[in-house]
Amino acid sequence: MSGAINWCSQVVSVTRFGLMSIPQRRGAATAAIIGIAGVVTVLVGVLSIAAGFQRVMAVSGSPDTAIVLRSGADSEMVSGLSRDTTRIIADTPGVARSAAGPLSSAELFVIINLPKRATGTDANVPLRGVERAALQVRDTVKIVEGRMFEWGKDEVIAGIGAAGEFGGLDVGGKMKVGRYEWPVVGIFSAGGAVAESEVWTDASVLQAAYNRGDSFQSVSARLTSPQAFQAFKDSLTSNPQLNVKVVRQAEYYAEQSAAVTRLITTLGFLIAFLMAIGAVFSALNTMYSAVSARTREIATLRALGFGSGSVVVSVLLESLLLALVGGAIGAGVAYFVFDGFRAATMNWQSFSQVTFAFQVTPGLLVRGVEWSALIGLVGGFFPAVRAARLPIAAALREL
Image 1 (tube, rainbow, N blue to C red):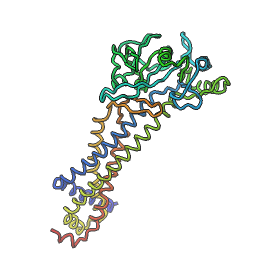
Image 2: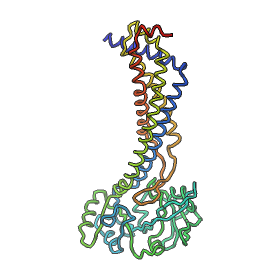
Image 3: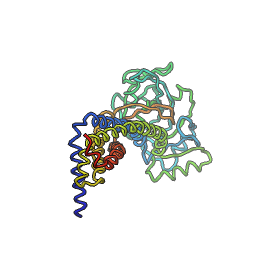
Image 4: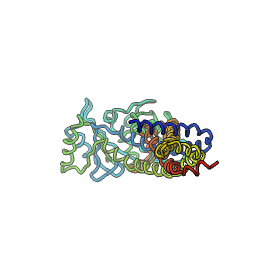
């Protein structure tokens, strides 16, 4: 027990001496801290893009809401349903009902070009035609400015994300699409869901404008309960009159987000890894400088009976502490710069823009600090070994 206490006291003593000498090496130490902070900032910043995009898709799904597409379709863009099919879906057992009828909205989904406010370049924006039950199927949708469009008129309402990101979506203005001009009469929120990236209008009006006849691309239906999904699905998929695919809304949007999230995460780790290599060399340089500056001190301690193990641990601890300082700075910068920053990216399933806010989560901050700790340990390992192997007699003779 006393041996362990003695070893710990040696580690504390050597580490204290090392930390006290940092002001003499402040240039190298500062460079290492800044390098590591940069790695953490970039890593957390890029991963916050994926987290924000994934969150938008996650909150878009409700366990008691289902989406019906044509069988084999993986998105609304490649789906197609007839009016007769949508009526059968609406009358299927398991669909919730109100005094006005089934909570089922047959919908049309088209892509329009609108200029981005920041750059003026055209971007693909979803224009969704909905039926009257849409606001009850997606009960998070709320008009926050202006009013709801009138059914049967060529008016639109814009999601709050789309209105902020794309031009021509101000209330009172007109959205120009080809030779058509659609008055913008309202802005809506949807609890952060992907619907906030869309523009909505009456499905029958959109059908006429795009010569779609009486066809639709999907049906969104609110069920009586999450447990009613399987019976609802079985009833539709076993019906010989239909050729449809039924998925939970949450599962549909999770699948939509998978490819983009995977791409962003991969790129984030790749960029951070390349930067981390440079940060490791910076840490190596800092700790080699520390060992060189303390050659005689370390040799004196070894001559007084301090073990090589305590020297190794003390150098590693010093490197780790510097790295953690850099990690904490990088995490703080990432949080204040990126958290809540709004942007738009392409959803490759629908080939349309999705607006979202970067999300710097506690998990991402912890991951960034973990990376800084790893860089510090790797950067301090070889200098620590060198310090422990210094020949005592030769080191004492160095100036």
